Image (cartoon, rainbow, N blue to C red):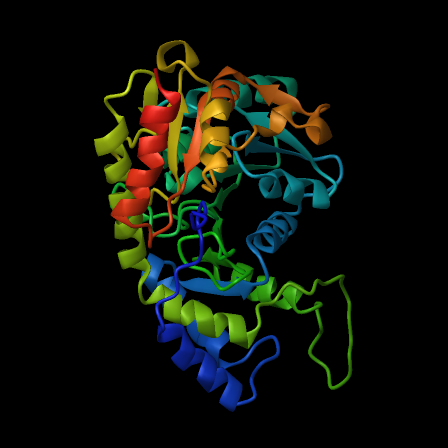
Length: 375
């Protein structure tokens, strides 16, 4: 049987027109007219005034932290249930991540736990320099509860929306809730540029500084003059051309993934021990990945049993992100809570969720889960 991948790229054909233009104009190096256009169109799409196209979402997080003056001796509070890039960017600056557990309602950073932790740290004189909130698996965090408590202590919020392009919180696109937001266009995301990212903000100066730092911080001079350390973090014109084509079908891709999620619910929800990532009433998730939880005592098998059964039939599935506070590389970091994200990792599985996934493929996946693993 042909392999079913977790989240493969979904190209529409529009990308070729933009790529051809980039190729024929010989704009194939970093920067160029498609980069400028992609930034403008992206900002308009999500309702944020300014955007800087970068080589990755990780680069965006790194530059966001640097522009908030974060460095050695600082701490940054970070969602524990996330991909390692979120925490890695903190370490790049020399600061230390402090992890915060998830809430059951959204699987994102627990606002109450964050508030308690900030109160304790304020009393001890150990407030973090920033809070990085992740919109996990395309699900917005609860910003109306997170932002006020951070504002109370004067702590900037950076939004890691790498997995959540197209998601909405109370009718408003993610990416614009913190001082800045960061997106990823990795090959497995809802839209892709093969590799790339975007930093967005309503603060024009921040985005301009992002562009400056991401092009090796070259000062305005006829020669190569540098007064600060820069980075090679800019997006190429070719990749931006792909992104412009992909952006035109963003809403179609989101709707397709939501339909995939609904199809899984229709076929699996009645099985004992199977649960699905919730969608709070204030959120519109992209369902970037369909995430299920498997309670082995009720289902009769573990999530690893299910993963291996699917893999034996050439179907890719993956456990949920292993929380950062359980990662060996962050073993010495502080953690607030931990039980919720640890349980989600133990029981959670991401099923194939590509926007081109067919009903026949979903039937193939769910038949294996229902008949080969379940009691």
